[in-house]
Amino acid sequence: MNIDYVNLRQLDLNLLVALDALITEASVTRAAEKLDMSQSAMSYSLKRLRVILNDEILVRTSRKMEVTTYARQIGDRVRQILTEIQSTLLENEVFNPAMAKKIFKIAASDYVEATIGTRLIGQLTNKAPGIRIRISNLAKETVMNVLDNNQLDIVINPQLSLKSWHVKEDLYREEFVCVVRGDDSLTELPITDYLDQNHILVSMRDDFQGAGDKILERQQQSRQVIWSTSHFMTVPFLLANSDCAALLPKRMAQQCAKAMNLRLFAPPIEIDGFTVSMVWHQRNNNNPQHQWLRQQIIDAAQNIS
Image 1: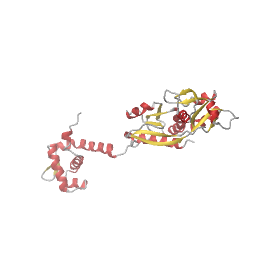
Image 2: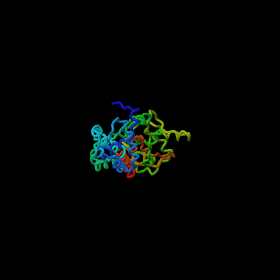
Image 3: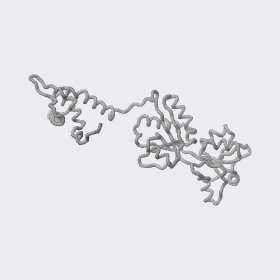
């Protein structure tokens, strides 16, 4: 059904409220008292309603005012419309995670998924058994468009290109460590030994040059990157079975070190860490379901070691 905006503009919400009170009370005086307004103001509302609806709404009989047949016919529908407006615009939606059935879609790297996923999945299974999470690892070049098209709920990543309609909240700060296969004879990894190693690089681009290579280039040095991958979580397995080195996020490396006999060292080059942030579209700012999910992610990030 199409909306007739021109005619609808004649009828504001206050007139609908007045109409409901007039039909319910069958009295201008009582309707005015009910809405805490003057009798003259209610009389003016009744006058406007009579013109718009082409009906008297209230008519005087020998004993009292009576509601017209037409007004009685539309009374229940007017009350229903006002109830729907109230519930839609004025009453906050209540989200009950324990009873909810919902799929949330999040874009995040396998590193982020491994870092906060364990705690997040524990929170969900305890608090919201009907909630399911789909994780996608999308390219930075396209992920924000997917978010804008409402095909994603949240993106968790560092250094995203944001627009004015994107909302960001920082989750935690991360540092890099240099990771090699376990060797008890190693107590440190000087720059000369570091450069002698073959290196594994995590890169989301189709290349063999990361931030570490750019730093070395400015120092007129270089390293030999023999393996480039877009997957963080494959690197510990590769390191455990080779003589290569890699720069990895510290939290992820610590989780893998004991189980996979890896050694962690401070990077022999000065390389900046990064901040992992959560980004969503402003359309979901006040969505109770979305607010709940964001808080779960914040709680999971705060509890990582």
